[in-house]
Image (tube, rainbow, N blue to C red; front, side, top):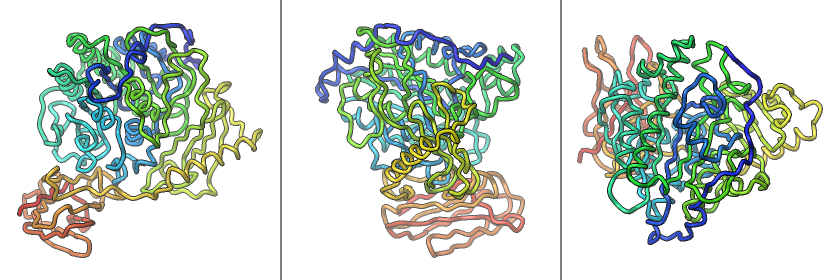
Length: 575
């Protein structure tokens, strides 16, 4: 396969007509809502910088995205977190994910703090109707659902992906999936991304005079690599591996669904009044790499802080009118999206954001890059740890500390690498030994940042139970504390009992058990015991009295002498 080590060249700063709305929109009150632009934010899952045609991929077919990009400002060096949930938190709040309590994709630390203000809340307060369709991955129960964070309409799936062992339903897949429809389980017919697009189209075309904010967040091309053969077959025929054929097929499917949504916008007469922003949530997936593929020469994969783990495709399309810039080389990050879109919509930006508006870079070819360092960090574990697997980017240099992504870490193990990205975008030549002062300066910048983003401490968001907003509550392995996602793993839930009363707690296993098994339920210091009887898959604790306040809940079933956590647990107030 073809693997060139240089990026395609483009005409940077070529003039293009953009941004008429920036000049036309001057009011910020609800009364002016009808004059505001609509916004479609497209956030894809595991689609890296090289996973679009317009960035030069010679095999992947993304005609809709390519055409939109040709009429947009493309941000060539745009960055996200190495993994899903932190990117989503940073994008939606304009703040580094570490400030929001989201540092991981599971273990109870992928839940967005309810005190955070999202872009949906900011736009809703200024007359927008708001909807999310696809992946949320920031909490499936109150107070952290999309419905609690500014979205009027929500069609999402549980956790980070459909079909994982934390899904409440056995056999749930990308076809005919059970989804959360405004927080309620409902089975839909068809391929999940098609279903999400259908719902987004209905939302766009709904009657009314309010502008809309649509977050279309397909859960593809994230694994499991599931897509109809008609999308994967052309890539199989091209000689690609089964994994890559499916991966690319999923991207072609989501591209087609973007086309359907844009057609619906045009049919609704809103094409000249709709901003479209497209971005990936992290670097390319590691699941389709069984042959040499064109990846723009970038290093590594998703979950790493090297370029191919954090550099993502991004473009911003604004209806015609003002000369602008077609391709921006200055770096940007997902935290910039909220202030950028709010400025384009004439909505005041909240205080305390880490992101900066990108509008000056879009409208002025001579605009200077934003003077700042950008920070990226991700590792498994509960609380943030200083120096563990991070990067600092302050053009033209990038500092990488690659140790501690998964394994236990001691600061003495830190290994610092320094790259001059302007000369070495592929991170091949470590300059740390030649420039120790630059390394130390960037470590100092990181220390200031880490102190800032962790200044308020780190506490897990407690899931509400006994609140009328969300009943009954389904607790899955996605959100238990300090544990894995699979059969045999154990974990505990940090809950907030919102009302004292009598509750039913039902613990469910994923399949029928072949004999009687003992079950233990621990509620703070109180222990209750039952059994799962022969051929049953659930154990119910009726009439459990709970007091208002914090509650730590654990439950396990003994199987072959070992304790295993349940697939999921339902908690319902019954008085």
